Length: 390
Ligand code: APR
Ligand code: PHB
Image (cartoon, rainbow, N blue to C red; front, side, top):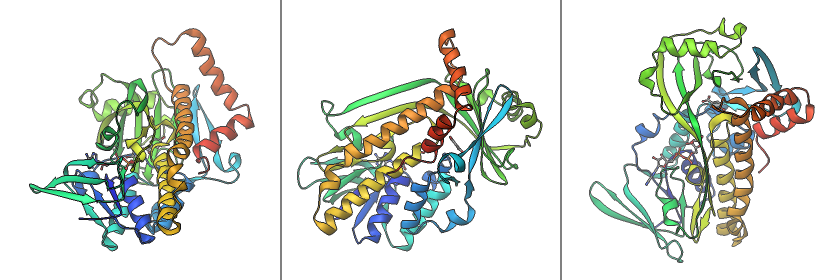
């Protein structure tokens, strides 16, 4: 088979790029290791910045998002037993975010690919990029025991943190930066009315907690737990009791509990791989970088990669201008590192670290009190949370 752009990974990054390029008449093939059902069973975060929602509309995938997603003009930070609101609208020149689950968004992207007869090959085994440094790269894979090959101009590695694409970059070229946090988030989904119409990020001595939502009848809650913990240690009742302990009394008193329909632990990690381009291979999204979820930057940062790649590829194919592709790694990484900084800052300020020296503890406390005493600090938070410009 032959195509112009071969995309490895059928997560949100790969599908969005495929859809955007298709609408510009550029051919793509998406190779996904898992089945569609498996991809759509993964529960991920749910806060979209405006840059991402614009891309979804541009990709003709924004209809259900605009109907069912919720526009949020602010969120709360709970600390010292009280709630302080971050007014995103006020502190980011009228901007806001959209609360819409990544699972639903991925479903919309798959449906759009179906409508346009896009080629998405599921259960592709042993996917392997070849000759990405040369002018004739190709990708091989196995499907139903047949060996297959796709010749292409460009290979896009959108295959997430555990994908194969990044491994094609030689170790003496690839520089990796990593920070592993000594805790994870235990998350549950429950068919209950959310405790608050807006998200609550809670700082507490017992550990961080987050009250989020997918809709007015579907809640998503998280608590910080040690890395050694296991979901088997947490009955529903124990989870709700611990969440309540970490919330201000007025919020805890209003929490509606119920059976959970999902429970999992995700470790917190920051990671960046540089460069994001090697010859004709371009990395995008989680394949190149991940952040702890505290600042809701993961999917949104994948979105800016896709924007830079999409515009670079369109300029190349339509205007014979390769400058966007040449600058891809540099431009994408500049924004990636700002998201890394913001996610690290939010994570550090809101989580409880064991053995924090007294001096550092004092700094964390003053960080919070400075935040709510300074319009400049709130503007900085808001500007990053709604998404820095592309
Ligand atoms: N071959 C083919 N596909 C692969 C391979 C492989 N060797 N390895 C992984 N994949 C697939 C995964 O099964 C997954 O469906 O690549 C896809 C990558 O999707 P994601 O991990 O969701 O990454 P991405 O599309 O970049 O999404 C951005 O933002 O909020 C964050 O982590 C969150 O997934 C989210 C991400
Ligand atoms: C979520 O709803 O899953 C969510 C929201 C905000 C975050 C992280 C996760 O910062």
